[in-house]
Length: 411
Image (cartoon, rainbow, N blue to C red; front, top):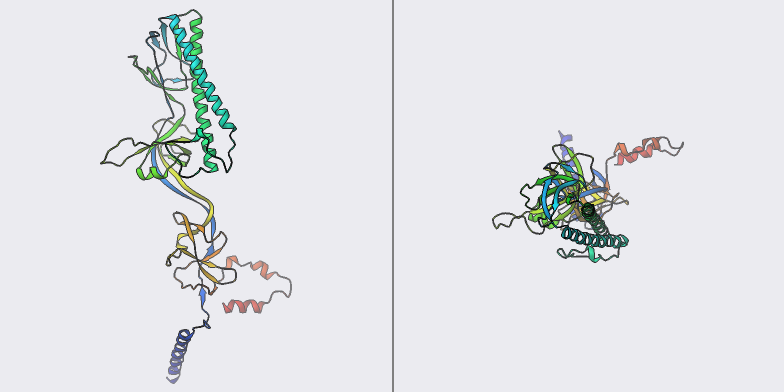
């Protein structure tokens, strides 16, 4: 009984002494130690900020074909709705009413197209020769007066605009050249002495409409190239820009592909004070071997911002108790530091560290433990990280078992 009382009094006395020491320790003579249970490194990771939109596969272009009743009398259509046509295929025929007038009109149309083709070729040559550098100013032909830039465009933005401009001009050039080829074919038929002129298709694609009433356009042709057409909400319209990358998923059939935001409408499709405005979105598709048909529905994940190989931590590792978010940094000198940081992108369980810490630095998890800034820290041994083979196979006499065991025991 007496022994039990002595033990209880001893325990109580030790507790009181420890409390008194902590209270009167104004000079931090009793050193605190932070016991860290879990820790890891800041790691590089790719983070993305995205917005979701729905869309439908649609032809890139619908080309109208006209008939001028003043040039002659219509004869017959040579195609019907649903037909696949190539550039130069015959579409319809008509009998020339006034040889001289038709010849003059064809000559005028041909000269106009030839001038337009020359102008397009010059534009392509000039912009192709433009050298983009970090200090480049946006060439006038690439400027968009409807969307003034808040700040000078980056090297990547100018390079993208340059490539986009060249692509658009090359498509326009091909279309104009096809029209000129068709007119030259009509001139050749007229010069051969016949009064029957055949009008050829300026593009390759699918005939989507044939008007037997001869109301213009008498024929419509959908291009073979497809894009995704969708809608953006008012909030999405503020963050989505041309040139942004898009991940595209089609459910039936199951197709995964990529694309780029090609254009965004500035005016909503319908203006209604009672409804949220919707803005048209056009996404250019990357080349794919998967068969596509107009009308396929698609889900689009538009990447509005990204940070590649950026310093990243798990969101649970952030300490948000202070005025700014912080991390518990395990410094190489064995001290623990509560370091303020600036946050970047957040994606699921990942958080970008924009500044304040770098990839490779060690950080402590602060859940369920009490950590102290500026103190020494100790951690349990992670057996899988200890180089046992290297330790146990050192040169004879260099490995001190007693010192090794004493170190473990002290921890």
